[in-house]
Amino acid sequence: MIMKHLWEKLTLKPKEWRRIAKSLHVMDYLVKNGAPRIIQDLKDDLYKIRAFQDFSHKENNVMQGTELRDKSKQLCELLNDPKKIQDEREFAKQTREKFSGI
Image (cartoon, one colour):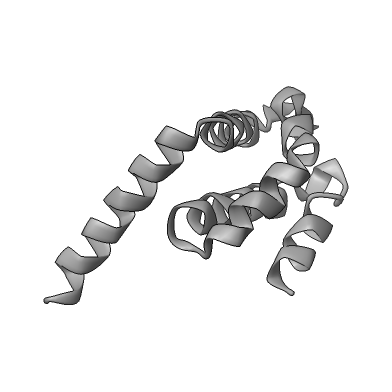
């Protein structure tokens, strides 16, 4: 259900770039902290994420989208490297355990 919503956000118009960026951040969080099956779902539609690596949008004569390009690139690199995924998931687990004792 949540993945369907996130994929819909990736199809928004460029002027909604902030919502797209938030969706990519949530996807990144889910890769690191979510169920393992989410990783495969994201890998299956990786081309949708990769499309934002060349994103640009001009808003009030200012180019926007640097955050989007960077997050897209970082997420694609993460999804293509199983070792890095495992390391990030382990780090997230350790961080959760560290803060759950507080």
